[in-house]
Amino acid sequence: MNVRKIIQGALLGAVGGMVMAMWSMIALAATGDGFFAPVNFIAHSVWRDAPLDGGFNGATFVLGIVIHLMVSMMLGVMIVAGTSRRSISTGSAVAVSIGVPMAAWAGQLVAWNAIDPDARSLFTPWVLFVGHLMFAMVAVAWAVLGRRQSTTVATTDHARTHAHA
Image 1 (cartoon, one colour):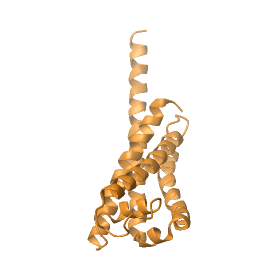
Image 2: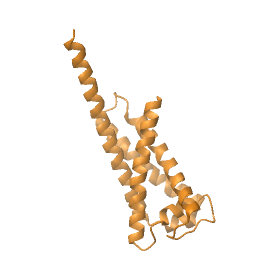
Image 3: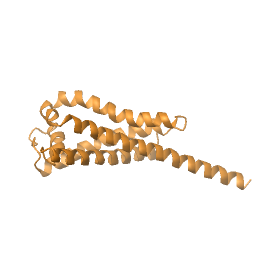
Image 4: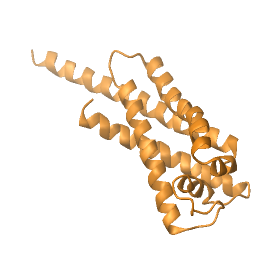
């Protein structure tokens, strides 16, 4: 994997993570848990003094966002690594783009519960699931558009090469 693909993966993860975070924050605010609840829950997993409600705390907000973006960016890099090879079909790229975030959701249920069952139990399950699904949809769009763009570039380069021959 080259630096360009790592950067693409990190950007994919940042965008997908932001979509997921905004969804979760709005959904938990709408259900009465509070806008900052998801960020607080994430931060509480490594800092037990972080609040377990929806109120705002600056340090908790920064810690929760940093943790979430780091994990999201790692997932993005994994997705780009699995989908950017020309030998992989578009259908397989879509499967990887959906599979990685959904596997992360399943793994998170187990791992987060072992790390911080209090925070995990407060995160509304369907909101967490839909958030991961939204990340997956961003990843699918990224993978499909990226494949189209690379195909267009390759076709254009091929046409230029043969036009000058």
